[in-house]
Length: 99
Image (tube, rainbow, N blue to C red; front, side, top):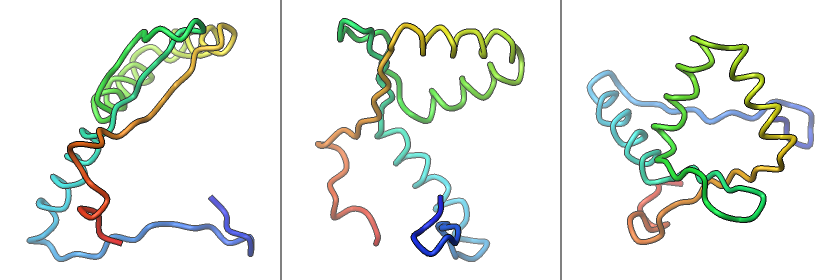
């Protein structure tokens, strides 16, 4: 992603070796609190998965059967499927995040 000045933006995470595992667990937990929802063109839910699980499954499928995943992506675009990424509001409040 680029900002207005044309420079690339990134998020830097600084922590020492002993904090690495705790920070990794926290990031995975935050990902598990977000959900990937796939909706049909009619609005009905086709799939509702934790975001972390959805990403892992997609990466594995792309590595194993890339041609099939490309065809599935084209079919999803042609059929107007809608992807939503939502956060469960009752689990993580905004004050739980560090700014």
